[in-house]
Image 1 (cartoon, helix red, strand yellow):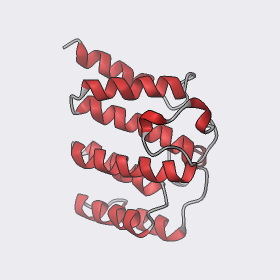
Image 2 (cartoon, rainbow, N blue to C red):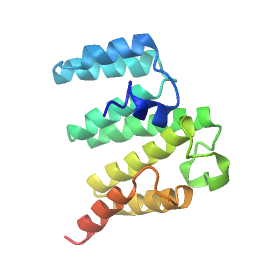
Image 3 (cartoon, one colour):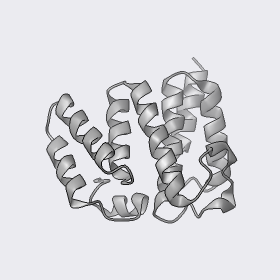
Image 4 (cartoon, rainbow, N blue to C red):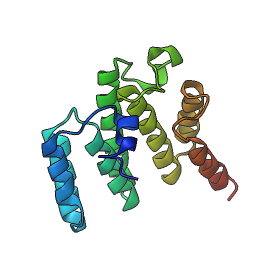
Amino acid sequence: MNLITGIESTDLFGGNVPAAVLQLIDTARGGDDEDVAAALWTAVLTYPRCLPPYYLLYKFHANRGELGEAQEVATKALAVAARQASIDSNWCAVQPGDADFTIPGPSRFWLFTLKALAFISVRRGNRAVALKLIAKLRKLDPTDCVGFDVVEALLTQSGSR
């Protein structure tokens, strides 16, 4: 699955990625961790309205166990997507009718990033925040289009330890 150039990218982000961002992403591929981080941060800082580099950057940090950094990037991504989707910048205030979260574009990316924040919260041991995020996801995405059930299962599993 290629979330940047394939069908999944269109389904999630709702548009094309600028050539310069693709070039930075290509630079990151196969590089060491410093090169990857530098290329992705450059993409985010140079193209702050382009959503895909945020996804790659918060995923990069989460995979490395750098959960504070992942949360910081995901929070920034949520704010950028909220502005583009014309929804409230406070995720707690967003309601089901505020956007169509089923169609590709910023609102769907926003919802997907909310799921990422729930996942990060679970991994950081912040159960209360994770529960609130999952409750919001359930309200905004009752058919679970973004797959928050996986995060919910992880939360349940971590609570039984």
